[in-house]
Length: 102
Image (tube, rainbow, N blue to C red; front, side, top):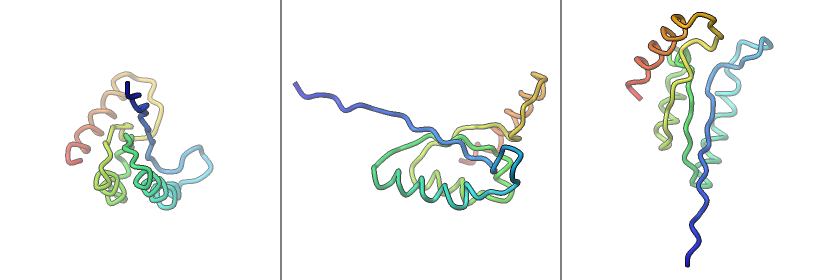
């Protein structure tokens, strides 16, 4: 009997650098190309959760993820915590609408 290979799902969050320490996109600029190249080298397919507020100024990064054969998922539009369920749904709706092109 031939052993089945183990299957893993890798997920990656794509957002602006966060945590109150910086308002930069260094992680996208420097980290994302490294992750994409590493995944390519090892034939790994991933699911990248994207904060769609990045699309305004960084759509090329998101297209690059898709061009490398990965899936795109919604990480909301604004990378914020909303206490109101209505605001959470608005955030998700905006994100879904923007991601339909991907």
